Image 1 (cartoon, rainbow, N blue to C red):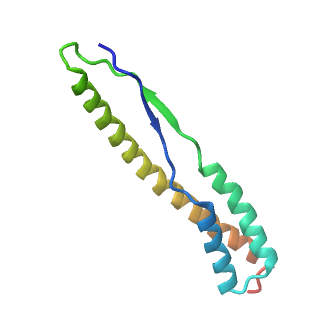
Image 2 (image 1 turned 60 degrees about the horizontal axis):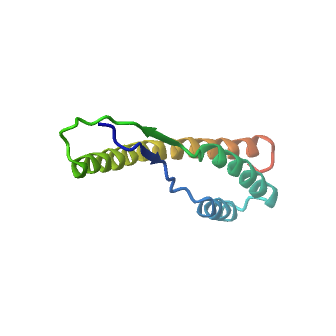
Length: 118
Protein backbone atom coordinates (compact mmCIF):
# COMPACT_ATOMS: atom_id res chain seq x y z
CA UNK A 1 0.00 0.00 0.00
CA UNK A 2 1.35 3.44 -0.88
CA UNK A 3 1.01 6.27 1.52
CA UNK A 4 0.74 9.91 0.74
CA UNK A 5 3.94 11.59 -0.25
CA UNK A 6 5.53 13.23 2.76
CA UNK A 7 6.77 16.76 2.15
CA UNK A 8 9.83 17.96 4.03
CA UNK A 9 10.04 21.74 3.97
CA UNK A 10 13.29 22.95 5.45
CA UNK A 11 12.15 25.90 7.54
CA UNK A 12 15.11 28.07 8.26
CA UNK A 13 15.38 30.03 11.45
CA UNK A 14 17.54 32.65 9.85
CA UNK A 15 16.69 36.22 10.58
CA UNK A 16 18.66 38.70 8.51
CA UNK A 17 17.44 41.66 10.58
CA UNK A 18 18.97 40.20 13.73
CA UNK A 19 22.26 39.56 11.94
CA UNK A 20 22.19 43.05 10.46
CA UNK A 21 21.80 44.54 13.96
CA UNK A 22 24.77 42.49 15.21
CA UNK A 23 26.97 43.66 12.33
CA UNK A 24 25.94 47.29 12.87
CA UNK A 25 26.63 47.00 16.63
CA UNK A 26 30.03 45.41 15.95
CA UNK A 27 30.94 48.17 13.48
CA UNK A 28 29.84 50.85 15.92
CA UNK A 29 31.62 49.26 18.89
CA UNK A 30 34.86 49.02 16.90
CA UNK A 31 34.40 52.51 15.40
CA UNK A 32 34.51 51.26 11.81
CA UNK A 33 33.87 53.97 9.23
CA UNK A 34 30.39 54.02 7.64
CA UNK A 35 31.74 52.70 4.33
CA UNK A 36 33.01 49.58 6.11
CA UNK A 37 29.60 49.00 7.67
CA UNK A 38 27.93 49.46 4.27
CA UNK A 39 30.41 47.12 2.60
CA UNK A 40 29.98 44.42 5.26
CA UNK A 41 26.19 44.65 5.23
CA UNK A 42 26.06 44.50 1.43
CA UNK A 43 28.43 41.58 1.00
CA UNK A 44 27.08 39.61 3.94
CA UNK A 45 23.43 40.07 2.93
CA UNK A 46 24.25 38.68 -0.52
CA UNK A 47 26.06 35.77 1.09
CA UNK A 48 23.19 35.20 3.53
CA UNK A 49 20.74 34.93 0.64
CA UNK A 50 22.93 32.26 -0.94
CA UNK A 51 23.00 30.33 2.33
CA UNK A 52 19.23 30.47 2.73
CA UNK A 53 18.04 27.92 0.19
CA UNK A 54 14.47 26.76 0.11
CA UNK A 55 15.19 23.07 0.45
CA UNK A 56 12.21 20.86 -0.12
CA UNK A 57 12.13 17.19 -0.89
CA UNK A 58 9.67 14.36 -0.61
CA UNK A 59 9.58 10.63 -0.05
CA UNK A 60 7.09 8.18 -1.46
CA UNK A 61 6.87 5.42 1.12
CA UNK A 62 5.28 2.03 0.48
CA UNK A 63 3.69 0.42 3.50
CA UNK A 64 2.66 -3.20 3.94
CA UNK A 65 -1.06 -3.70 3.34
CA UNK A 66 -1.67 -4.99 6.86
CA UNK A 67 -0.93 -1.59 8.47
CA UNK A 68 -3.87 0.48 9.55
CA UNK A 69 -4.24 4.05 8.28
CA UNK A 70 -3.54 5.38 11.77
CA UNK A 71 -0.28 3.39 11.90
CA UNK A 72 0.79 4.74 8.51
CA UNK A 73 0.07 8.31 9.58
CA UNK A 74 2.04 7.79 12.77
CA UNK A 75 5.04 6.45 10.83
CA UNK A 76 4.80 9.35 8.36
CA UNK A 77 4.79 11.87 11.21
CA UNK A 78 7.80 10.22 12.84
CA UNK A 79 9.76 10.22 9.56
CA UNK A 80 8.81 13.80 8.80
CA UNK A 81 9.73 15.26 12.18
CA UNK A 82 12.91 13.19 12.53
CA UNK A 83 14.31 14.01 9.12
CA UNK A 84 13.35 17.68 9.34
CA UNK A 85 14.91 18.05 12.78
CA UNK A 86 18.13 16.23 11.86
CA UNK A 87 18.71 17.95 8.55
CA UNK A 88 17.72 21.33 9.95
CA UNK A 89 20.28 21.08 12.75
CA UNK A 90 23.05 20.00 10.38
CA UNK A 91 22.20 22.71 7.87
CA UNK A 92 22.00 25.43 10.52
CA UNK A 93 25.37 24.47 12.02
CA UNK A 94 27.04 24.36 8.60
CA UNK A 95 25.63 27.67 7.38
CA UNK A 96 26.45 29.42 10.66
CA UNK A 97 30.06 28.30 10.36
CA UNK A 98 30.28 29.40 6.72
CA UNK A 99 28.69 32.75 7.49
CA UNK A 100 31.04 33.47 10.41
CA UNK A 101 34.13 32.54 8.39
CA UNK A 102 33.00 34.75 5.53
CA UNK A 103 32.33 37.70 7.86
CA UNK A 104 35.81 37.42 9.37
CA UNK A 105 37.29 37.32 5.86
CA UNK A 106 35.29 40.39 4.79
CA UNK A 107 36.63 42.30 7.80
CA UNK A 108 40.18 41.21 6.91
CA UNK A 109 39.66 42.50 3.37
CA UNK A 110 38.56 45.87 4.77
CA UNK A 111 41.81 46.03 6.75
CA UNK A 112 43.84 45.03 3.69
CA UNK A 113 42.15 47.73 1.58
CA UNK A 114 42.93 50.30 4.24
CA UNK A 115 39.24 50.95 4.96
CA UNK A 116 39.86 50.19 8.65
CA UNK A 117 42.88 51.86 10.25
CA UNK A 118 45.30 49.28 11.65
